[in-house]
Length: 209
Image (cartoon, rainbow, N blue to C red; front, side, top):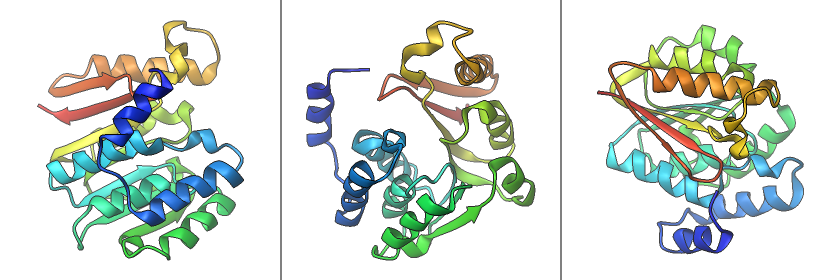
């Protein structure tokens, strides 16, 4: 959503990730199909900032991919912090575990290999941060569940909420319409403070007022 030179300038002037996370990011870009699904270093720095600023300790993530976002969030957590991450792909999550095992922060991460809608049926705890970055057609379902499983001072972070700018036109495709519906639900939420930021292709922050 911004010129690549400006994004890189922002990255260069923000806190960086640990070496294993950087290695995982580069490996994914060069070797894994669909690497555009990576959150990127700019979002990684934002997530790390939110975790450290809020002194958060428990995280749930919808959408693991190759584990980069889970690892950068684990890096920002205290030693007793936890990341629970959900995905259905055994191949990309195998890559994730290989890199997590190389990191001193990997022991903070627990993987659930199930569809998101099935996984949350078995999760009954609340979390300090919930990161939604999975199948777009279930965004509204994940949001509704997250609102009921967010700790009082927690934050929900939703990725891809501008969807390459396609949210300006309804009827483009099912995924776009699902994100538009999610965004409208967020806009109408009462009792919550929310902001949609034009970082990458949109990231929404939601917290209880």
